[in-house]
Length: 447
Ligand code: DOR
Image (tube, rainbow, N blue to C red):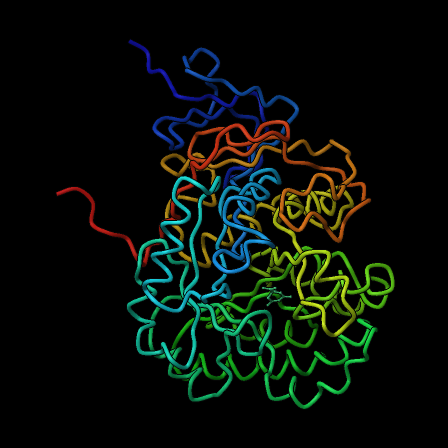
């Protein structure tokens, strides 16, 4: 009897580790079972991918989904719906919720809220605070955790770990790569008076290059002292790229689609407080440096820093407005648009949106189209042209800084462990997300 696959994706151009090749993919039991020519094979379901590219499922390792505490901005269901509609197959969620994810109870609560409600795969970060340093090594071992995240400068929420001795103690408290928001709290406090009421153009003057550079230099030094790997989230400055290019022993680097796409002062003039985020969007010399870092491989990972706030909150007057913008749904099309414009190769797209996250965080069975890996695919039409509209945004905030922008290159299907969760822009399957597994927290299986 011939083998019958659960799913065959046929006729597409497939991004394999060996190159982008014409191939069919056979899926069994949620895993990739065969890659090659499967024309004569049987399957329960088929997806005709002719004219399309089949990429490893996009992993967004920085999302703020606001549950619990601020469900009026987002919740785990709406945030993960935005993710899969945009072509994202897995997300890591940030700990600055209310309460923050700093205890075992808060982490267990998020894991149980996610079950049967999240549409994509997920993991939750544990937040570091001076009060929970002693608990971090146990917390980072809980399956379903992406590791520890520390805010070294204050942003949205109450989490803060700004004193060198606390940062060092937190770094010494565990082993997994620790993610950091790198802005220097002391300098932020010294410069608060530079915020001009009503003028968000002053946001990057307050949170200036030196705020970011100094903090990144400090944390690299502390990471080396502790012998601990760090992941520097949303890097925004040319100066940090120089430091980070010399720190490949201890650090990995994330940047965001918005820092690669928008620039100051234009974004503040056009979008006002809707362009306000931490660390800020800066002038084009930094954007150019980030692009060089993407091209040269200094950037390991793209995260959207999806940080929804309502229009009512954003419509207040600066600086009473919260920092952050949504992004999980627009990540894929914004970056594919850069692919089409010749700024990014499709191979680099795959690396920074999928393989890089798997490598950086030690994800089990994701990030590559390889036999035995999870059958997670972002299927894209590189030629599709559409306008990004606020009305398309599934996030509860209902807006995007990219409203009105025409982009070329869109996700047409999101397939997670062999299940088609999104097809042609419509949700096909609800609540099938599962925790992402990590090499460093693998549990024994079987008896
Ligand atoms: O702009 C930001 N918004 N940066 C952060 O670090 C947090 C985020 C949020 O949660 O709103």
